[in-house]
Image (tube, rainbow, N blue to C red; front, top):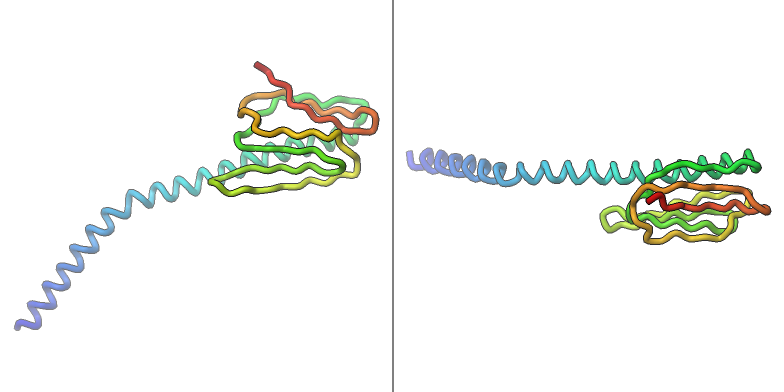
Length: 140
């Protein structure tokens, strides 16, 4: 009889401990899932921005007589460098540094944009004297 009583007490204590552990862990599971959603959202916003830069450069390469001018939201913690034949995009998500390099057949006017505040800018891309010139013009 004592053996059965000990087993029932151990089972009751195990269920009690499991209930307390689950009630402590459940609020943190919501925070973890929200953290993962913001990381993918940040990555998507950076990729959309890089895609818009790429589209602007492709437009100017195909139409060298025309300038490309468009309003664009510059993301936070984003650095971009235009070198000879490539663009280096560097951004930070959750203290991890990511790099994206775009390569083209035409050369760029060497320019770097570091620590620019995150807000609305005019993206101006033009083709001048065999160089593609990219500028971010402050709207306000």
